Length: 374
Image (cartoon, rainbow, N blue to C red):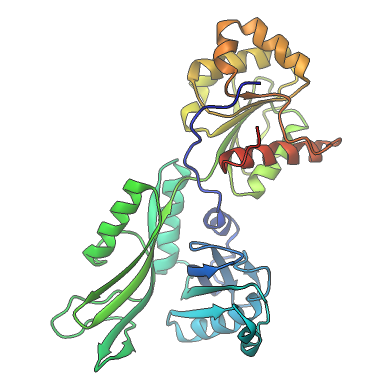
């Protein structure tokens, strides 16, 4: 099989933002947003990772393998009670780690921003706005200000909000959209991150005031197109949705194109020959053809060949079936060859639908991450 030469799409595999927005608790429950803003060495999560800690002690997401969460909950309760954001640091490098009561032995360090995130808070509004942009298939930025201090006689004094004489107001610690009234330095840094497609740390000094922030570039989450809504498509959709991916599913059979069978997915009833009219294929990052109907699969493949995207097209079924379909497609099949993977999925010896779904989604994940071994 020829190597896949198509350029991989720019997507974000850390979908903690989407998962928090989808699974957030009821509005009346107090909550604190915890965001990793800097790391050093080996850490379980990287800058931009998020979790929600609720007033009842429950939480959504993880920032470590479970070694920091108990301590984070203590600090989160203090933030809930005071309403004042704060940043805390964990350094788990070397033998001194045990002195902090964590004893993780992870050989890494991280700084975590904790801030109130109830509905109506600046953090909740910023996350929701970023989520809407990413769900529309566009990139955006979030800015997490995690230090703002004024130096007096060489000593740093924290600034929660407000301004010193002769200076513009200092941004309070927290998460923001890249919009005024944030300082122009942060807005310009966000524009640069959007242009380069990369997050960055920003440290700048304005007179005696020093500010540090994470400017996080957020590409859209993966968007997968599933062509065929049979029973074996259900675990594929479930596995992709569990990762926070967007999923669009199409089928020409009303008995299969049923939204209730695919929670969280966009389900579309359409003729396979009209795929490009029914779905914005150019916004999908991977496609899997699995209708179990030869003529329908042929039409789906012809439409995907004409579209020229996405760069990953998986085809369910044995190699002989793939060969027959591509041969019958003629020139369209030849053009599709560099993008198609069939039989779809990593060979993990899967024998049940759930295992096959794991193999399919794992292969898509590996391709999106640039970890294919062919």
